[in-house]
Image 1 (cartoon, rainbow, N blue to C red):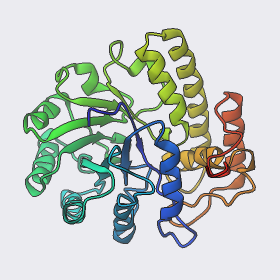
Image 2 (image 1 turned 120 degrees about the vertical axis):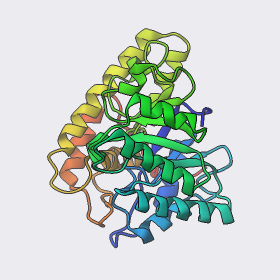
Image 3 (image 1 turned 90 degrees about the vertical axis):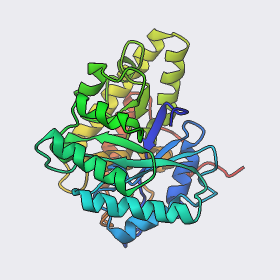
Image 4 (image 1 turned 120 degrees about the horizontal axis):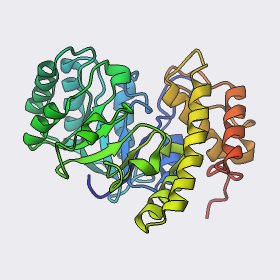
Length: 325
């Protein structure tokens, strides 16, 4: 897990019948692979909370697509369900599937949130211990209070890391309490999932080793450029790019919040990916489909394209319209 500083919770592409579209998803993966190696399937952005069992199993099958992934790709599987029993059921499905037939990518663990609505740290700790007792894979802990309505506290995380099973932590809260507490030093690979302030979050000035960002679905080249600028000590370039990305993403998410249907994370990133996939033809191409098979509104995609263009982040020629070598 420590081999990659930029991860993406991959969008799951669907057809009008709400079936997973493996061909479209594979094309998306191929477009991302020059820029990153870390993929989370069935995360929040990838419809992990909403996917039914058949859709989840189809998402699992994506990991076997050798036209999309190879052994250099790192694969996390999201087990995002509200209760401990449901998380264990999903986790066992993952281990049984990938244990009987290895995926094309390197499977590196399960992503697990606290149970929805937990009221005490003891309840959260018991949840993770039960999941670990029922499984064998490494665990990535996902802090997502926007959905779970609870948070793993720093001392609870210390106990989880002490188990030897927890190797990664993603925080989408925006509060960064565990990272700021510094209780874990460098014993945990910590990735920021909250959008905005990208350059500021990175060590050594910030507390994170990298990012696991929903917007990497459409903006991965720019995040890679930001990482490279940071690594060579070019703070001015990193800060300028971080500001452009922060403005664009905040504006897109604000637009997505006005839509009546769908997950704002998924809606935002489906629209951004539509622009990057089809370039200047993004409004004439078929609109992307959500987990229920419904299409994104054309006007929403139009506005997202304008926002990306205003910050110089929109592709003119999309990855689906480029000639095949």
